[in-house]
Length: 165
Figure 1 (tube, rainbow, N blue to C red):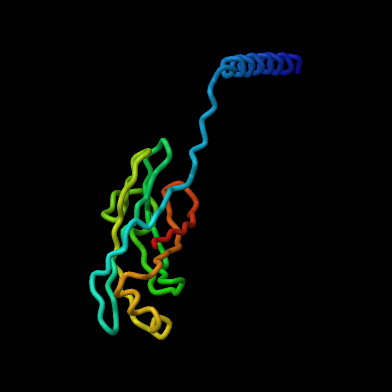
Figure 2 (figure 1 turned 90 degrees about the vertical axis):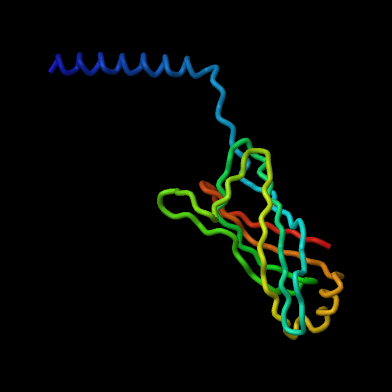
């Protein structure tokens, strides 16, 4: 019994010694910085590719900036497109990764402190909500905007808004 108590005391003293050495060696260490988990998504350009009395084809150019010090994997961006605050289209660029991360044609790598440009083409079908502004779309005299969300590997999904006059 005394032998068990003695062994317990020795183990306790050794553990305290190890903890105190670890504590003193970490006193001058630098804590890892938290990476700001947000991309800067902006609507860079809208190009009206074609338009007739029933539909329009629009090319959307997004600029995505990575202000962090890490290379990021952008899995997808989904968005809703508006013309003068009227919802006209929805789309998604890329797709969410599941399981083991592997390279995919739709996965975008964004190096630290750089930006990438993504393009997407959507079709806008003319409906009653657009009757009053269809000619303005043809003339380029509308306000384009979008809202959506994106996913970066290791982050929670984030929402964004962007507009172009």
